[in-house]
Image 1 (cartoon, helix red, strand yellow):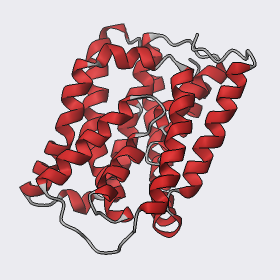
Image 2 (spheres, rainbow, N blue to C red; image 1 turned 45 degrees about the vertical axis):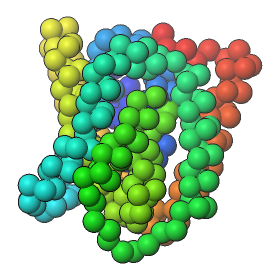
Image 3 (cartoon, rainbow, N blue to C red; image 1 turned 180 degrees about the vertical axis):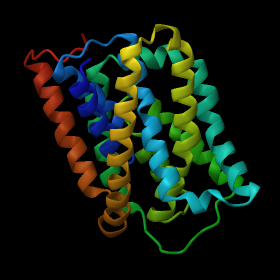
Image 4 (cartoon, one colour; image 1 turned 180 degrees about the horizontal axis):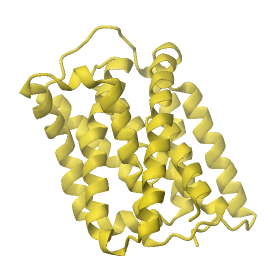
Length: 259
């Protein structure tokens, strides 16, 4: 992986991490088109540049993290399902990361669900209290995003809205939940592969995280404003179109497999 390829992947990560379009799916697609070999470092890179995205949440919402222990207990409860299921299914999830067909189908089905949710969900500006049962349910919704192309952001926001949270409240809780979830995933992946990292890989990781941090800051500000005004509909149509394009390319024999 060259530095320029790493920068492009980091831009893709920063833009898509907090949008309901699947950052992992988009990075798999980008890797396929750029012909990046899906070596162990590539897998680790696509997970670990999420640290930059995490930092953007901490910077933008730093005041919200100076709260009572109740705030952290709810985050921990919401984080638990993904921690347990992700650990148990780690090898299976790694195998899915190499399958572009899974990404295409997930994008298509997820887009249809987003449009459906956007039509039936009644948004409200009221701030409903996030209870421990609500946090746990959102945590189980997050587990659906272990399938590449589903979108962690979409699944948790939808899970929150189905519990009566407003779009903005559900989105912000999704951002907060991303911190322990992505930190654990990135840390675990780094622990498993640290002995294979070369000196030049460290520079690539640092550049990728810096780029992802800057781009994610801009994406979060855009997303909150856009979501509260227009909802999920545009993102749903985008996912459907992209999913159909990918399936069309695959059906025509175009090689999109991870090499």
